[in-house]
Amino acid sequence: MAPKHQAPRGTRDLLPDDLGRWQWAESQARGVLARYGYGEVRTPMFEDYELFARTSGEASDVVQKEMYRFKDLGDRDLALRPENTAGVCRAYLEHGLGGRGRIHKLWYMGPMFRYGRPQKGRYRQFHQIGAEIIGTPAPGADVEMIALFVDLFEAWGFADLTVAINSVGTPASRRAYGDVLRAWLAPARERLSADSQARLDVNPLRVLDTKSEGDLAILHGGELGPLPHMIDHLDADSLVHWDAVRAGLEAADIRYEVDHGLVRGLDYYTRTAFEVHDRTLGAQSALGGGGRYDGLIEALGGPPTPGVGFSIGMDRAMLVLEQRGAGGAGPAGGVYVVAMDATRAAATRLARELRHEFAVELDVEARGFGAQMKAAGKSGARVALILGEDEWNRGEVGLKDLAGGGQRTVARAGLEQALREILASPAAAVARPTE
Ligand code: HAM
Image (cartoon, rainbow, N blue to C red; front, side, top):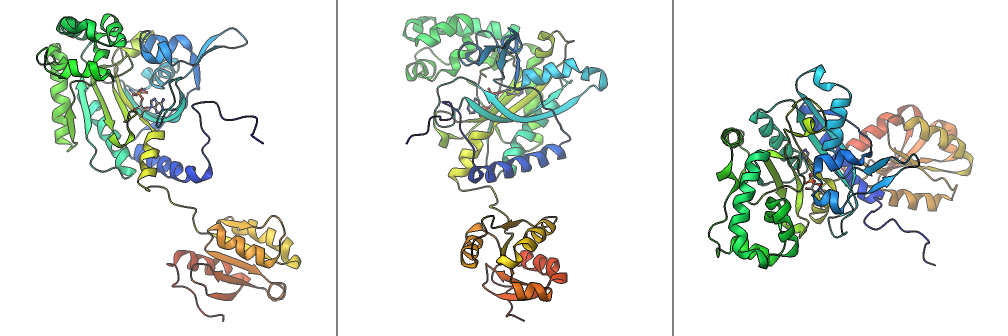
């Protein structure tokens, strides 16, 4: 019989087999973030709809097509967060963090929600790890962000990553470049996809982000001459910033390439924008991205406060690790307690005591010895701790090293030490004959 319910389209359940890898990656990330001196923030998974409309941009796909917008029973206009930079900046203002120190380094991890067409690497509920530095316009902050971005990937075993960077200037220089782009594309306008024609009117830079083959041929095929670059239309201050960021990346030995076509899908970006892609993922290849957002906090009613940050799409990063069979320590080899009818109660007590230090499993079904030994073998445990009635009455227990086959008897008083030795030893090297 088919089950009556399935997880909603575009969402998925992560089961223990998947979560080994996720938890490993999350703990690696926590370590890197702590060593960079970032503090965690947790903000609500839904916010006022207006917060996202105002920051991501009314014309962005995220707001136009992908928002989980709803009214609650109090008739409030809310939305599940499609991203978390807006939420973090809202919290920054709400708690007056600006008055408690000039620069704040924050990170977050959690689910985000976008109503896109589900496909490999694209989900309606997905997970991000992100970081933000709020309070400084210095190019050094952009460099630190990109270094942190790369170091997180490296902690997960991604080597040879190249970050793509661009500058999207200020709103004014972007408008000027938009006019240049619109004029450059004018002769081919009618042949552009409907999507790009619409974007050309509202936000011409977004045309550069087209996936349409026809559009790409027009943009890069040469018929209109070389594509004008945003970098060549930057205002003077943004150009100085751009040069300083590149010099900083070089000084820090961070590999990057300039991607003149890199425009981000959210409207709040100013100056630096960056992304990293993994082409093995197909269409949804962006593993993460970010950039500077110097006008965002002001747009939320705060004082002018610059910021820069990024988010990594965990689902995609974990897909790549899974494809490579990398990441994620399996269950730590622990102890499986095997009891007889007469020692069952003692086994429950002993297991609880041992769990102060060791990973300990126990048969909850009170099955026979053979079934328990089989379960111990399957569990991934390193040691079967056997509580035979006579031994237990003598103050002893049996230990079977499941990786080496050897079995011995030890006194209860020496049990913890014996377990430590076996668990710390390489497989098959510990087994000593029964004493
Ligand atoms: P974003 O580029 O929209 O930026 O998202 C960052 C990453 O989230 C993407 O590169 C991708 O890996 C992942 N992602 C986005 N949508 C989906 C989806 N539907 N399914 C799976 N993964 C997805 C931001 O969200 C900005 N808040 C980044 C930022 C922080 N900028 C400044 N600070």
